[in-house]
Length: 627
Image (cartoon, rainbow, N blue to C red; front, side):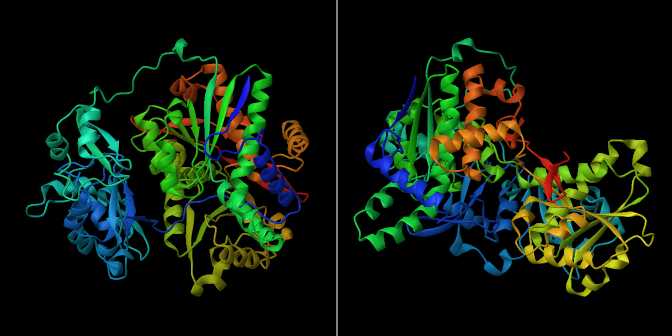
C-alpha cells in the first residue's frame, strides 16, 4: 500500500486542482523559465522578528559561557539575561538565547570574537601583543601559549588564536559568567500560541510558582516560541553512551512520513484568479520560490514508489511550510504530525529549529536535507543532517593533503583571500594537516611544510616568489575559497606562469563560475572537493534519469536528485530496521546516486551528521572522480 495524504495545503497527485498546479510547475520547469537554487545559510548573523522586535538567535554549545556569548555579540550580560528570563546561574546545551539587536554595540560587533565550543576565537589586530590579549580576556599569557603553539613564532595580523574559556578569571561578582554550559536537568517546553502558565501547570501537573522559579520568575511573561524549563527532572543521570539494542517491536506494517516543504500552494492558487499576463508573471515568480520544494518532493515520491514495489507500506503527507515560522508553528500544533515516524524538513533554519524542538518533545526522528548550521544537532539526538558541513570539508582537505605530504618533488601552498571566513577555513585545513601528520609520529618529520599565503593587493604580482624555483616540481595549491573574483584572478595569474607545474585543490562551487576558462581547469589539474558527485555514465544514474523523465516528463534537477537520495536512504533504512534509528545510523552506510550516507554521532545527547565527501578532477573535458 502507498498513500499520499492530503493534509492542510499538501501537494497530492491525486487531487485534480493540485494536479493542475503541479502540471503548470512542470511546464514552467520544462520551458526553463525558472532555475532552482539550493537553500544555504547566510554567513552573516541572521535576524528573527518576535512581537515587533529584532533578535539574533544563539544556540548554546558545549563549553559556552554567558561571558563568551556576551563577547561574541557585543552585548552586556545584564541585557542578555533580561531578554532570556529562563537563564539561571547555569547555561544549558541546546538552549536558544535571544540577542536583542537594539542592545548590540554595532562597532564592537564587527571585531567581536567567535565561539568554538570551549574557546573564544580572537583575530589578532595590529598592535596586539600577548600581554594585551591576555589582559583583554582575563587569562594568563601561558594559557594562550599552551593552546596556540604557533604564537611562539610571533603574532601576525589576521591570525586566529583560541582563548580557553575555562581559564578566564572571574571579575568581581561575576562567577557565574564563566561557568560552561551544562546539559539541562529539566525537561523543556516550546511555548505555543494561546498557552498560559495555568494551562502548562495542568499539562505537566506542576505548580505555577514552580515553573516561574526555574525560569527566573518569567519577568516578561510567556512568549510564543519561547523555550522554558519545566520543573520535572530528566529521568536519566548517566552521561555515557547507552548500549544500543535492536528492538523488534520497532518494525511497523505502515510507516508515516511527513515532508515539510516550501510549496507556496496558497499563493499559486491565488495567481489563477488574475489576468493571463499577470498570472503568467506571478507563476514565474512563485515557482522560482517553490520549484526546489516541488522538485525535492517529486524525487522523494519516486523513491517512495520504488520502495512500494519492494513491499513497503507508506503514508506520505506533504505539508506546505512556505518560508513562514508562524505557519510552521500552526502545523506543529496538529495532532496528526505527532504520529509521524519520520519528518523531513523544513528547509529554512528558523522553521527547522521549531520542528526539531517539536520532534525532540515527541521523540520523533527528523531530517535536515539541506545545508544548515551544525547547531541544529546540539542537544537533540532525534536530528540527522544530510548535508555535510563546510568544517568537515576543510578537515578532509587537510587530511587529504597530509596523505601525499611525503613526496619531495612537491611544493605545498595554502592560498586564500584576506576574509574572515576564508581565514577560519584555512585554519581548519592547517590544523587537520598537522594533526594527521602528528598521528604518524616518526613520519611527520619527513613531510613537506605548507607555505601560507594571504592574498592581498600588494602580493598578487609576486606569487612566483612562493613557487619552488625547481620548475620540475609540482606546486600543489590549496585554495579554500568561494570568492569568485579571487579564484578567477588566481587561476588567470597561474596560467601565465608557463614554466611551472600546478595542481589546484578547490571547492565544488567553482563549477558554477561562468567566467573561468575551461582550459585553465585542465592545465592547472584542478581537483574540486565536493559533498556530492554524480557520474553520468553510472548505470544507477541512467536508470534514475529514465524513471524520473517517464514519471514527470522532465529531467531531474539537483533538488529532485537530493529528494530521491534522501527518500531512498531513509525509507530503505526503515524498511530494513524499522524505527531503530540509532542502530541504523551507526551500522547502515550507502552511496546513492551522487551522495554518500555515512552518519556519525556528534555528541552524547546530540544528533547525527553525514560524512559525504568526493574529489573529482577534469580530464578530457569530463569530470573524473578520484576519491
